[in-house]
Length: 322
Image (cartoon, rainbow, N blue to C red):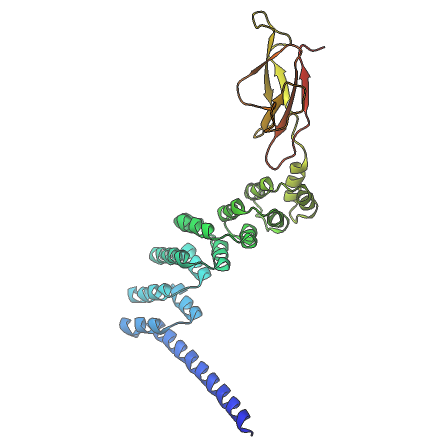
């Protein structure tokens, strides 16, 4: 055998032997930590030697009914070395032991404080499911969202997070129109209609690109999203201009009092100069809650607007009615 080939074989064999030795060492430490016949000092020392996350997870998650107080200390020690976010989230939400749940939440808190990697932050937000965990970690989850700026990863959270509240928080940070359309087209929505309408409604309101909206209306996987988008593409209903009286009343100096009403949640704009209303344009006024007064014969034009919806057609009225 050539010398070069001999050294390659020798090095490979040495690496494999070292790996096997490490693996055996980890397995032995795991067995010692789990063995109730060993002293607590031996078991905790074994946990200290463990680095294999799957073996640490096994110790932390094994909540056998016959485990004594010393064994619970072993669980806690293993949990303190866990870095697997999915395992920590599962323990925080589902473990029968209150102290283990609290310790898992503390580990999640500590993890959020040190996480800077965008993909890792997104993964954390996707795996939290239990409402108790969301409540207990609300402040830290907010911190995680503040750090998460990648639009594609935010869209991933909005589509796939297990908790409705965390999906909504992701949608609030989404600004990219294509990413919002992707959420609407491809997300797996819950069977609960209220949750679906809440999640999708937030995305639809922020999606103002009509071409993308039209594509969502045709292509969204969820029929409920297609129906919601179809409604979003329809213009708002025209406002209704209503006079308090059809003609000027005595003592009003020829003025007629009007109110303008429209769909819930929309803003109403009007003109009295014969021009069509254009928000933020000179001569266009916003109607609030106080009736307006116009001279007899004035032409009043009004429109309804709302973010994410098409403006209504112009409503036109002139008083007195001819």
